[in-house]
Length: 404
Image (cartoon, rainbow, N blue to C red; front, side):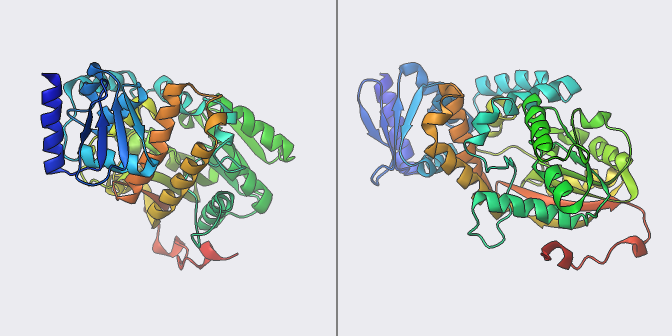
């Protein structure tokens, strides 16, 4: 009886969506979900695994794969594509929604919860990240000026692009919120002679960034702190935040920018580089995926729309001076990360278990697809304190951003 229901479901999918997938059931039965030659094979390993498939969303399909209920074969890009096609218009199951709600209640944006969320993602192992990031371990969108740069070159270009945008000069005090493994502050100190403070909530990042600063002989120029940005005191000429505000929470964005306003010198400049949703109402994707990311990748992460980010920035006392989209750049970055990850599969498995390996495979390739189809985007926003006379605003011709 179950087999008949599945066959009927497969026929409905074939008629309605025509997805190039071959379904192989636990008993060896094969069903075609499309009229074309299958690009992807999905193996349903048990009757209980049907729960992930019959009302598909990116959340349920992703969880089925991570938990081992579903196995998939085919090119990773094809797997992600058919996952979207199967999920299109599907609603999340009540079980997934309930689990998500429980998790969200736990991971509210308190200091302890934010630190737990950061450590969940970043404190896997520094050696794990070294396998697929560039040599400087920059874990954010690269900047492909010509489109043919390798990953390491694109990441250095991104850092240089940021430092030119904020018009960094020798002797300035720079605060980098969410400093990662220290690449930006090291570059700022080496190339501009800036005095830098980098803060992170990740113990692993703090340890390695501190080692790298020492190895570069920059202890007198750079201080790395294991510290919540809310606890930072003092005044800084420049503030950068790269890949950080996604972890703040939409409701907390005004307070986040208020804190930056407090830390920024009166004539200071801040640059915020962050991922955004493309939905003006900040709604989750109709095909799911947000719950999967929240549960397995970035607990507590929330993506605002650009309009909400700008509104919160203004409420925090900051005026946006320049906005640049890097969506295509992040597609390229994520594809390169995914390619590196796939090529280093055997080495990667030494640092993470089978479940987490599957999570990272889906996350890197799936996020690249989400950027590619305009479901999410990323912007660099340069700002200063609001309410100033126009004469105090530098002439923003952008020439300084591209000068060598």
